[in-house]
Length: 142
Image 1 (cartoon, rainbow, N blue to C red):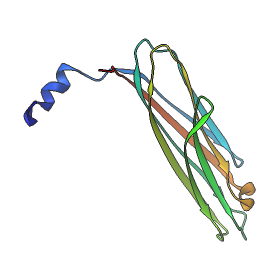
Image 2: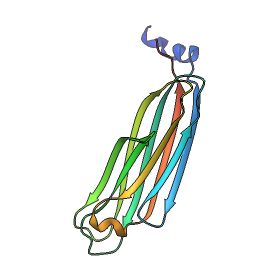
Image 3: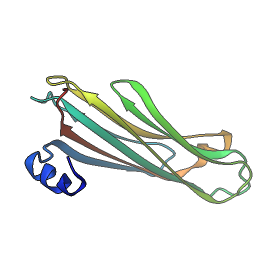
């Protein structure tokens, strides 16, 4: 296919979105979790899962505070990211992670994003938030 033919190819084979959801959760404390369940789809799919999280440490005199964000698919951790500060007394933490995977037809999947406190001082974290977005696009193996 020549370079100018890419728009034509997109029109001939449009992307078919099979599942598209976002879940958000907030907690006053130091942990939050969001979960989405992809039902058994009639077609194979490429799934993109993205999560972001935040929390704040405002207790002053803090040592070793932070968050860790985990992205979990069917009880297996597939991606993690953390935000950590060793000496700050008042700080906000942000973290994000994503994972792309192939999902066979007729197989459901549970996807969870969770933010946990990370470090000894982080038990006092507050205003914890997490957002999880999942999109499944129809796929076909050659």
